[in-house]
Length: 328
Image 1: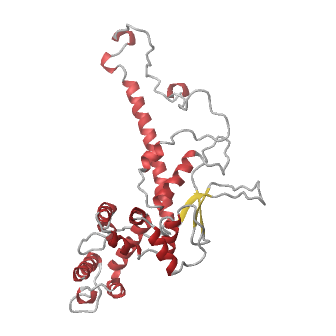
Image 2: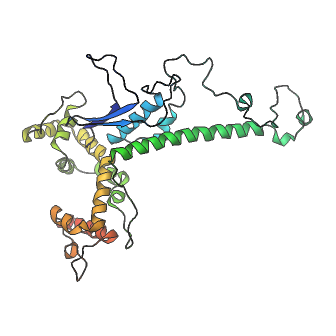
Image 3: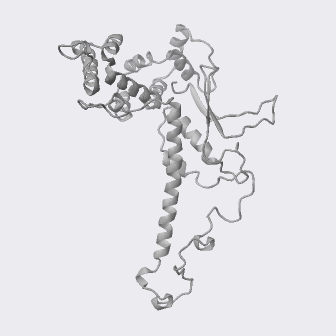
């Protein structure tokens, strides 16, 4: 999947023919503009609504889906900041309680420290009025504030973990980085080609170079990107004329924006990780031959017919790419 082709949205079961249809869970669907395929994802966490409606999406659920969709589009997302914006407000169609969304205080619920003394608001009381050390005045409040901060942090961490789990599900169970086998240590391709490296390179690249990068994208993606969100779905592979017309109609900024989305997308980095794994596991000779990358000794160990593996294989591949570029 390429950015702008697929979207991760809540699954809607209702239709004109079945207006009352509903599910027994909260389901997101990954659907595509270039294909009729659909992938469904059930949220495993407990529903947030008061009534226990299993199909009700809380603001937190919807925000998680929105974050996943943004990440799949190659956008930069501050996950913790996004999740913090929807803390609270997770009640369904019932009326909220009067007042704010604060939880019941610990000492009211009976969970507080029975030996704690919460002072009143009487003015002029000295240290003897509370029977304690004035240096500890307000200590309970500070501890309570710390507990609240820890609770908020724990909630955000749980939601962030849900985002990571959904992204792992979208990968289809493939391992991302993994540990390198024994041997020479060398960065994986997804480490070498991170957004912090590729985006500045793209910003300073010429329009001709950006056009050359577009030629490596699927034709359907180019046409969809040029049409925008209101474009028609594409049922078949676009013709060469359609692709050329779409590329010509795109401005330089649109082209760069599309390539940036691809470079930031989880799919791009997953593909780099998969290629790294294949190189490490002995696939260097066949991969280099298929891609036309000149590697030393054909990707084999010196004096033998055994393929290079581990970090040595990745290094040999990177050096081969460098040589290929230098020759051009």
